[in-house]
Length: 284
Image 1 (cartoon, rainbow, N blue to C red):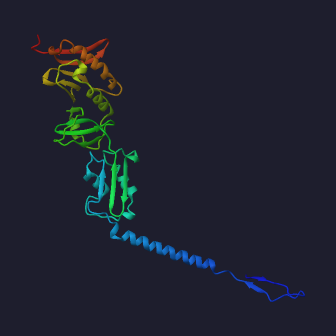
Image 2: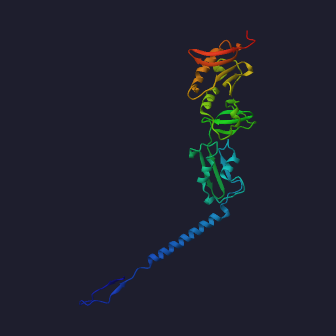
Image 3: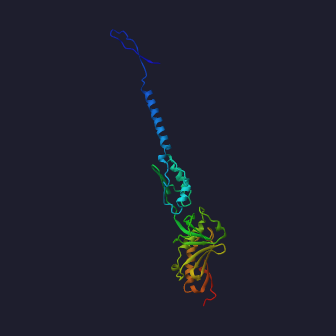
């Protein structure tokens, strides 16, 4: 109900009441705000539909994908075809999540992936990949493996590497594929044996070869057919990877002054003994 204002004239006679009416200001402000909102929405729609902000052909710049390769990155992004999304409204967070599924990326660490837009038409992708530790050779395939046992990628036959190589001849390993994870015990043993050199053993072998088989477990083979050292099969509870250090010391002791006489050394340190060895048939 409108308020009535009464004023007194001189002599105490009331004057004619006047009615206080609501101002038209607030209603006009609401109209202006609505117009501004509609204008902004129309402008945003125009920008999101504009071809000026579409991803340019070849507009994806990939950095750091040394192991995965740019083609795998584009497939993970869903941008390996002719799709040219509008970058102004592109959900880069969703793309980053997709990239963390790559085997070469630690998906538990968001900081390993960065996806950002460089308007008007470029997308910049930066990846920090896992570091390979070993080459896990299965037949003709050379698989790069990191410290956590993740199979990162296949190493092309024409590419050389200074990483230690483990020749895995176990039957079940034939199905090993990129993205899978090796047994932690196998990785721990491979790391320790991969650090052993002929100089550490006092051997004149030109090189050492790591191998693992179903029958003998882990082995070191001296180049030029000098000798073979059987380290055996390891398990988390009975024969753990920590045994390798004592076995390496035993092997060095067995080889000292008798390298030409040993064909196969079986390393089972126990009770002050290093194990046994089979002599070469032609040994003096």
